[in-house]
Image 1 (cartoon, rainbow, N blue to C red):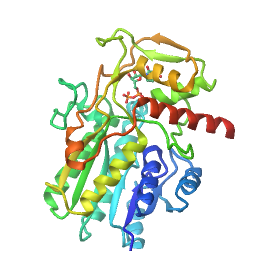
Image 2 (image 1 turned 180 degrees about the vertical axis):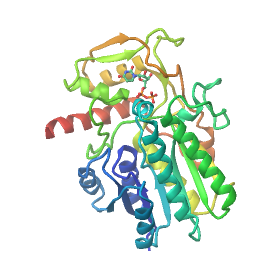
Image 3 (image 1 turned 60 degrees about the vertical axis):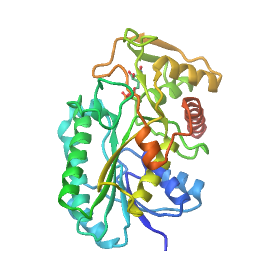
Length: 342
Ligand code: UDP
């Protein structure tokens, strides 16, 4: 019998790629998604790649009764990968209560259900935002967690604390938090990818939409940072590498290989690229010149962040296989596919 995994937010950007990776590895998948920031068409994209249609429940995890009913109906869940959350930094500043309600209540309700199970396994979608501007680069998992820059970032910090405390109190609960650096790219088939609603806030969808003619030019936020070319540095990781890491982390839980019942891993390439280098990588793989202009720094942006991936390499035996050019190529292919549809 295949193991059955619940993927919350499984129609979202990272969630959908993880569903594909899980199915390809022989897991059965049930998706919970409330379609607040995703499209039902993603289900078709997943099925096109894997030829397996995952089970799907349109459900809002803020509704405790619905969560309870779900676990009543699906008693055979072997593990949960929890992506469902609001993720726009700016929006979280405007509407913090929405973020705290959405990102924390859903987590609590899931854990309340899981701790009643015999051998619950839980993977949490966390972020390198928990480090803020780290004092040392590359950033290891031991770097101190800094005061969050936004309510969104705070929900990731509090989320990790909630899981840590619950794992301390409930020893049979096994959990892993994965701290992503900057996820970009799309499935190489271009059947699934990132679907930003409205004007993209993140760099890569803004780049691809600009190249597709939907945006006039890219605004690069600041060129006077203390970096070699003056623009900020990030660790851009291909979403397919990220998806694979979730499967590996899940198998670690299912095989009871953990050293502690709560573990944390950075997921990045270990390489930092500036905004200008990201633009150049895009231009190289697309063969297109990208119009851009320098504007003021964006409030809250940190200067540089890239991962020390030693722990994930050693403990999970996972290393990013794709580089920024591979990721840009897949993001561009996906954007072109979207343009064909419209
Ligand atoms: N960025 C930019 N123009 C944009 C969007 C992003 O110059 O339209 C820069 C941003 O300042 C940061 C990098 O691109 O240095 C990555 O930003 P993104 O929002 O994608 O991720 P973040 O690291 O902020 O989570």
